[in-house]
Structures are given as C-alpha cells and as structure tokens.
Length: 266
Image: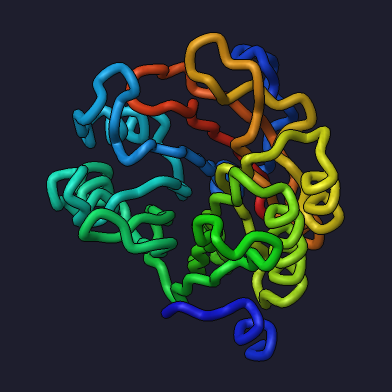
C-alpha cells in the first residue's frame, strides 16, 4: 500500500572492519543484525549492462543479516532482463520480501526493498517530499513490521534520499523525523542517505535517530572509498544499544559497499 506522507500523518562502525566489538548483549536472541546495501540494480560497475543477482545474493548470504534494506532495486525493467530482483534476492537468500516502488522505469519499476528472516506485516511505501525541486527523482521509504526472536515487535525501514537537490534532502529528513514520532513501534531505518555526517540534513536526522556508529567506515566509491553515505539508524526512543558496525569490502557487485550493524533490541 502506498501512502503520501500527509495521509500517513493523518492516519496515525569503525573505518577498520577488524576494530574491537563493543560489549556483548545479555543473550544472542536480543541482537538484531541489520544490513543495508545499495545494489546498483545488480549491475557490477566493472561490467556495464551485465546483471549479476548471484553476486549480490552471495554478499548477503555471507553476512547472514536478520533484516536487509536494499536500494536501487529493479523489478521487471528491460535493462535488467525483465526479472523481479527483489523476489529473486529473497528466493536466493531464503528471506521474506517487500518491494517499495519509487518510480516507473524502463518498462518496469525501480525502488527500495526490505528483506527479513521474519514474516513481514503491515507493509507500506511512503512517498517523501520534494517541493524544492519537484522534477527530481521521486523518493520513498518502505516500512514493514516484524516480530523479533525475543518476541518484541519493531518496524524496519529502507530509504534512498535525493542525490541532486540538498533542499529536497532537507525536506525528506524532516519527513523521516515525523515518521519516527508517528510510528507505534520502534523503527530501524537503513539506506543510502546521499549525505555525510557533516551536513545539516544529517544533523536534523540525528534529532530523532541514533546511528549504529560514530566513526563510520566509508562506503563509496567501492575502490578507495572516501565518503560514508550509507547508514543503519535506530530511533532514539527505542533505547537500543549499537554493538558494532562493519563495512563489507566487496567492491565487485555494486558501486556501494554494504554496511552491517548489530543492535541490542530492548
């Protein structure tokens, strides 16, 4: 189900991946392993026009996340051979899936996705504002609810913010803050924010969210990365504790490196 933000409101790591981990949780069952990955529609940058779903699936399986946020996902586009990348990745990783369309593209759809070891319920796609530049590519956040191993219920979000217009990003993070206040369940929000920790947009987002790391490893470009724009966040009101964050050094499958973060879910 797709909702406009206004309708929704009304409805009410370290740069060194080997760095020492933080304190261990009381039980493994309380530890949520979250992965975010901008998959570049499964097109390895070194192979223009080539689609390699197996490469992305291999990175995911190796990390064994409980939940996974994907960005730049093609569903039945001509450029990707009319395949449903979200469904295929779910099949290859043994996870449940929800796809949130951002735009129609090349005969199909393009957007973000959520994969989870746990059944997904109350799935929805919320369009983010872009009044500063309405001609920019539409952006969304996909959200789904799960019941975690310890019986606690929580929400999972995947988003990909505007790359071209900073003013649009400012609007979009304000919208994400409103969502943080409006959701009944605590939210872990992951994705390609297209902004770095030094920006006003990131500072605004930190009013409501906590990042999984304070000195997060760089995620782009994949060869000699110099910036971090991919993050795993949790709403501050959740009270969750971040344990560790790792950037996955797999430069072949995408133009972004994946990020894996672990949280103690209280």
